[in-house]
Amino acid sequence: MNAGVIIKGNVKFLVFVTSLLLIVFCAAVPGKAQQKKRVIQLSGVVLEEDSVSGIPVPGVHIYVPKAGRGTTTNGMGFFSMPVLEGDELVISAVGYDRQYFTVPMNSPEYQTIIITLVQDTTFLQEVTIVPFPTEEVFKQAVLAMNMPMDNSGIDKRNFNEELLALMVKTTPMDGYQNQRYYLDQWANSANSRFQPVTNPFLNVFNWAKFFSSLKQNKKKK
Image (cartoon, rainbow, N blue to C red; front, side, top):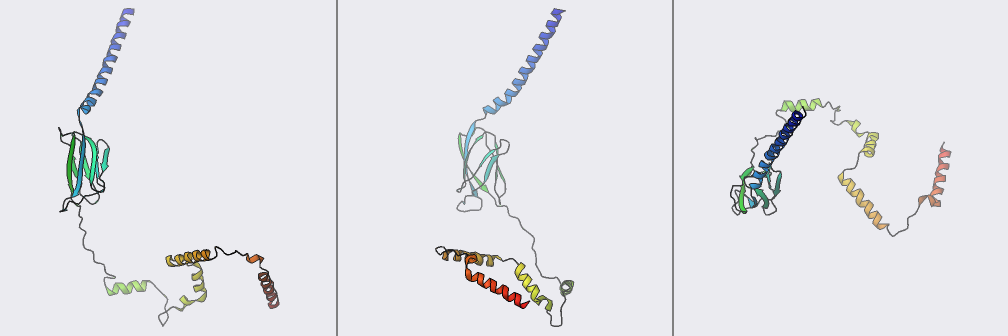
């Protein structure tokens, strides 16, 4: 019984070791195949296709999607990046059609290419802008506003003094008024920089005016 148990244990151990070796071998084969690919320094220039003098295109993305690496062209349209044999490159830029390039096998260690991009032109349909299609539609739009008008054509309620005063107080300043306010504040601060700052609460004449105004208010009551 002990010998049978030992044999069964050895068989299980051999099966486990064999399975482990197979897993390691299968994982090592793709790694060796990947190591066989040579590293190539790929350089190039990206130009516009329709340019006679060869205008470079800056900011073009050149990347390998499967590997997750890439680069962009500089101001002269030049780029340089390490790649592997058989890598598929995607060349894309805003306003241009996407281009593709596959690194050929048995390429030299340093390879230089020239890529031309075609502008992506989109034609839009013609649009005609008119205020109103017909006179009747214009009249209906005016009548829909339902504005109370008098015989002179002007609503006098819009000239109410209280309403105008409220509008002046509550209407915020526009850009020009904000600019003028800031410039006035800056000019005042520059003029009063070297002058003494006075406190109106310490001015005796102000207090005298305040008490006299109180007396006048009491007499009116």
